[in-house]
Image 1 (spheres, rainbow, N blue to C red):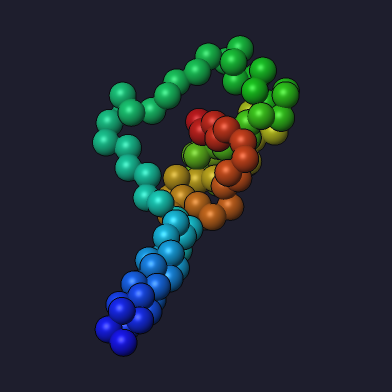
Image 2 (tube, helix red, strand yellow):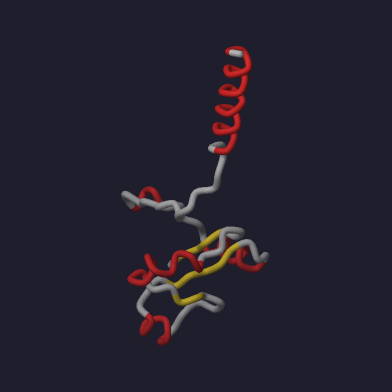
Length: 99
């Protein structure tokens, strides 16, 4: 009898551990940039190549008024002050270029 009890407990623990395995996080990961050295910089030539190939999206982080006055062709207005509330809008399948 004790043998079956041990097997049942072991099977239950195995199922419990399997259910707790790799699960997707329920919240967005926090990205922390501690200094300007943590930010990858690219040249204008590389930026244009990434944008032309559709591999990247260009974001203008200045104020909405500055964006309205002038912005790079194809850039999306994404004011730095709104970043925390709009981070879910950022695509995960392309490189993100901010200026």
